[in-house]
Amino acid sequence: YLDFYKRRVLRIFPALSIVLVSCLIVGWVYLFQDDYKLLGKHVFSGSFFISNFTLWSESGYFDSKSYLKPLLHLWSLGIEEQFYIIWPVVILLCFRSKNHNRNIVLSCATIFIISYAISIFTMASDGGANYYSPASRFWELMAGAIISTLRFIGINTSLSKLMSLLGIILIALSITMIDEKMSFPGYIAIIPVLGASLIIASNGNDLVVSKLLSVRPVVFFGLISYPLYLWHWPIYSFYRSIFAGSPDYHELILLLLSSFFLAILTYYLIEKPLRNARNKYITAILLALSVFGIGLIGAFIFHINGVKDREINKSAGEYASVTDVYNYYKYGELLRGGICHSVQLTAAISNGCIKNGKHNIFIIGDSYAAALFNGLSHYIDNKGSDYIISQMTDGNAPPLFVDGKDDLQRSVITLNNNRINEIKRVQPEVVLLTWSV
Image (cartoon, rainbow, N blue to C red):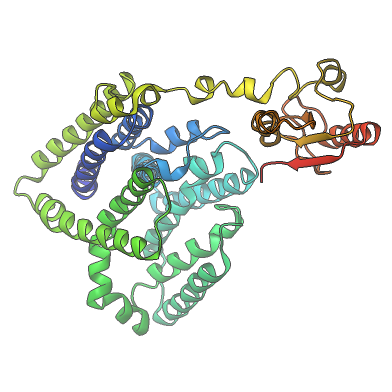
């Protein structure tokens, strides 16, 4: 049992520690206070393998863009380690019974089915539960556990070749079928998981697949795959943060090459020597203490609000110390929340939000539409125009006839009927429809 976790530490912790420290160093130089505070929290979460829960808790309307989170990708490592904490315990409990082989198979099947069902059930849920919850993700890892149980029943060579061929077909389908428009994970995730599982379960009995996976470039890619996974996202994320834009084709190639270069260095200079250390148990303990120590440094950075006394904060002045963007820019006031935004129709009329006049611009939609009012008003005032602006906006209420509730749990269809009636009554010159998609 301890030997298993020793090997996990020697496999996971060396490269992880280097990436976490590198992120803290780069963030110290380039990230403003609020972003560095967030990075500190994510370093702590990554060190203690709870990134998925942290990112889940951050999911929401005002969550930062994913590319502004250099350690976003550690959510999957968190779920993997959570699985490897729970699954060995299940195995130990099964071995205490007489029919332990049968119980292991039943445990695999039960956890797989329940977790896959949760993944499907939470597909339409908001807040990241489907994506970040271990309950909806364990089935993907459990597929590997199921493969390990096949030794109990045995598979002949002919069946192995068929499994390998079917696996390749499913992987090819995944590449061609699955895109960003599909809800993932969910029903569709079974295709790549099953495809990969069939190839692994075939145990190299298919000559074509076996040769393909054993060629030196593929083997080399497998060796550096873990540090490559760790490096690729921080490099891309810091580029987006520092240069405030998306990389073009040539820059993307450069970022990819940088990821490969750092992955190779990490594997040969850090990961491989530590994994082959003479006293592996002592090395594992020191690595664990180092990673957890780095995590505590991240927690301290978060606790002191991102280390205000840094050169980049001094050059940015007061804006660098902003840790609550919503209140700093008085977003609620800009939307005219409680006055014109997300109020009853009678209140909107009595508050002067809906005006009568010839040159009238009606702003209709959700909070995206409400956010236009302030800028449009300033523009009209500066131009000396005689246009007036009316506002009929409600949180989470697009100007479309779709089922759903707004932020006040009112029917979106009813709200839009009221909006149409007001348009007919006032007859504005311009109707501006805006909503989030």
